[in-house]
Amino acid sequence: MAHALHAPARRSARLLAAAAFLLLPPALATAQQQVYEITGSGLKQTKAPEPGSDEATIAQARRLTADGNPSQAIDLLDAWIETNETTRNQWLPDAFLARGDAHLADDDEYKALVDYERITRDYAGSDLFVKALERELDIAKMYLGGLRKKSLGLFRIDSGIPIAEEIIMRINERLPGSRLAERAMLMLADYYYDERDLRMAAESYDVFLTLFPRSEHRQKAMQRRVYANIAQFKGPRYDASGLVDAKFLVQRYQTQYPLDAERIGLDDTLTARLDEQTARQLLEVAAWYERRGDPPSQRLTLQRLVLRHPQTGAAKIAADILTKNNWPLQPKPRPRPAPAAEAATEAAK
Image (cartoon, rainbow, N blue to C red; front, top):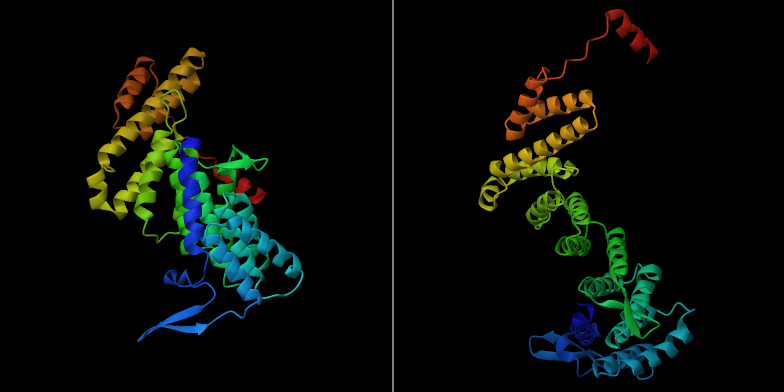
């Protein structure tokens, strides 16, 4: 699968670099040495980089990338950055962005990440800070889509998923609450959901809803969080805590979106099925205690089942077992301590 996705992802990277290599209007890609603005009478030249200037060098590198010569752009920018890296040259963020785009077009997204990360780390006040994070998220999307990371600079063997996860976490740390952070977090949750990593999907959608409570994708995240919790249940012999969570999540969704809940089946019928499955799991636990020869634990489990899930078929079975063994249907309430004992307890606190 990784190999099948490799070529489209590489083409996507090159298209991205070719389309975004300039901070100029797209229509001006053929005039990289000049800057124009749109006026009422058409295009008007407002600025042309001075030949031999830093701006002209970076513009030339961008033109080389756009023309399909990213390696030449990298060589040009390597020399310029080496000369200016220890200075306060205002064009350094532009140079790192341009070189990152060139690396991306040259099929080396990891080196591109290094340059984009340099901007986010050392030039957080730059106008290019957000743009660098956007580029990083594009690379994360490629890794989540199946592109594998290069090993030894040649072979794509290693998974890029850990890098994608790290990128998304950093975006949320650096631009908390932003639209970019929202898009990144939802992308990661959707990836886990599509890959059937249900535990991580449920946790990620939960984090998403906590961080972005008013997101336009809130309903989708709530629905998928429910489905991810339900799908984790493997049967009566396994932990049913996900079903308990799912039941409350369904009820919350019904409260907030009653019409949509009925339309998609997140309704009382589903709640009843979840209740029944949870009760069946308790019934299985009670049977396990019986096989172990532990009647007190068996009795308590059955009593809890009847008390917590009285409307289920499993509760009827549990009640029959309790009656057959002459056990009460509900556990005896704990006796309240005597007043003197209560006073002593309070005094001890």
